[in-house]
Amino acid sequence: MRATLVAGLVLSALASPVLAHHSGAMYDDKKEITLTGVVKEFQYTNPHSWLFVAVTNADGSVTNWGFESEGPSTLGRAGINKSDLPPGTKITITGHPMKDGRPAASWMHATRADGKEFNPFAGFVNR
Amino acid sequence: MSTTANHYESVDLNASHIGTAARFAWFALALAAAVAAEADVFAQAAAPGGARTFKSCSSVGDASCVVQPASDTPVASEYRESYAAYIDMKNKARGGTTYTRSDYAKMPDWSGIWTRADLLKFDPAAPGGPFSTQTTAVLTPKYEAAYRAKLRDVANGKEWDQLSDCLPSGYPRWLTEPFLREFILTPQETWMINEQQSETRRVYTDGRGHLPASDAKPLWTGDSIGFWDGDTLVVHTISVTHGQYQRNEPDYSSATSTVERMRMTSPDVIEDDVTVWDPKGLQKPWHVVNHFARVKLPNTRIDMWSCEANNNVIRTADGSSQFVLPGETVTIQRPYRDPESFYLTDEQKKLFQDELGGAQ
Image (cartoon, rainbow over all chains, first blue to last red; front, side, top):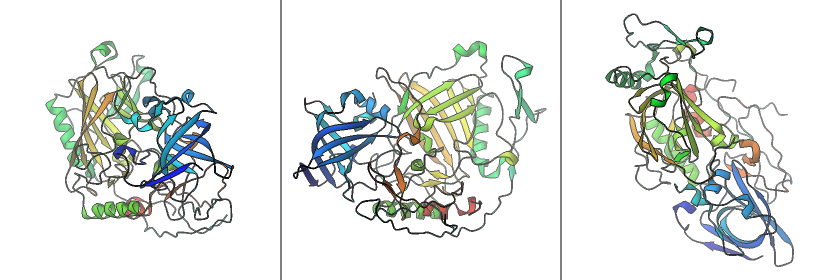
């Protein structure tokens, strides 16, 4: 698995796993995980969106990682549309992982194979 | 199904993968019997010759008229101070500006899509930034202790939000939710719509008063009446449901009331000057100024928001929040949900004990 666990401070206040519909208690905001994989499904939904990424592990098995973010209007304001990340898209994505080790994280930022970046928290910037 | 008196879903997520044998922890809560509050009313001086009821009619005429409370309908004593402040503003505005269907174009224009400009703090001027736990509210000792207890729980990884039960945020928390808004102004009422769960506040500006205390009950977005003071909408809100100002903010009781003065300070900003009274939670009124910013992104609309469309958040046995992920199955033993309290945290159940009275 191409996973890098980084212990440290969060990048910025806006990178905290503060999600409006539920507590962020399940996430470890002191850690970051960065994975590269292929988009399996983008649930562009309320109250939260989930980007599922198939990540190939070192032993050849595949894990379906879920990255949670805000709903469609906030993602839309961040310039992230459902059509940007169709199934099969290669992506490198960073988030705060779950404390219990299950394969999910809060989505902090991501970069598509062509270099386009996706920062969901930009959706809270007024414009 | 167990008939044991339990208060919320018990879910075991300690196992490395859910779907295996789940353990259930049970919590027995003994809530004291509710104390029925007497409808103690504060009699606002009635205008000479003022009617006790009020007819709200559309342009259709008599056939459309519905009887509503008179503008001088007394309010319960816990709202005495805020109501007096509101009436004082109304008197200074000589009753306010009355708009009709024919002069709708003279009303302020707040059309468009808006969003909260101040992130998550109820008082954007509070020190420490948007995720700070510092508050400018002067809390009563009981509410201060409850706030500290909540913060300790959160620091220990234990947190639950009623939004995860797909319940509304309620007002005044409505002000702090970071989502899109619409303000629909008509001569008779103004709707303030939060995208989140389409939660809508209705402010009646047709001259009616609050519901009489005998008919009042806690409402998610409260009972709001208002008037126009020039281009400023002045709103008095009572009868709210107890809750929290935000997850990193204190709680408020159902005795909370507010006076708001809302106006467009520039084409892209609506200011909401809010003063909160809460005889149980606040030692003195809490004054804050919030802002809504115009959203200008192309193609922005507010859509119907169904909270259940993708809600895999569950409450754990210890009262915190967890997910069910794809491929997992959890067994939830769900007891009776008392509608007054099932969504509250243990700390809130203690704090609001005198306001609860259901079949526990």
